[in-house]
Length: 183
Image 1 (cartoon, rainbow, N blue to C red):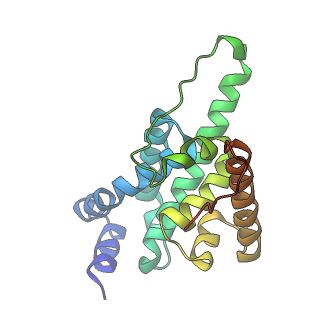
Image 2: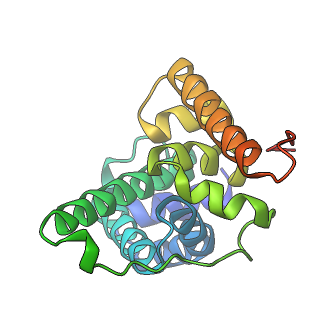
């Protein structure tokens, strides 16, 4: 049994210290992933906090301690989706002309600054697929359950997300030439 699996099992049994270490180890990637999905620091912080709270609350229901990371990222994706719903509900109550929503300029997180603006134009679901596969390095087989979809559905979403990103990059290049999106 790996040290991480052991820590997950201890946390499942109620060991606060073991859970704190697991959460702390994951915090940086959770936050960066939430930023990439939500494009807003405050919402990303809320989503990460909610994912960690849900993880502690629902940890006893985890069936396979070795799948902790995938399970935690699934909780994060759901928390991000909840943040988007909260934002949308709040926006419906206000005249959009009176809302100033600053763009989150975290180009340091992105390996390619040219992707920052085009990524912000994708939907949160499209960004979630790209983050899981290209940023976090999940295989298609591992990313599908995190999103609660089948591998075939993931492949089509990934394809559509990449096409939308490619189209946006091509449309916004001064010379109109294509460039490779993901290397």
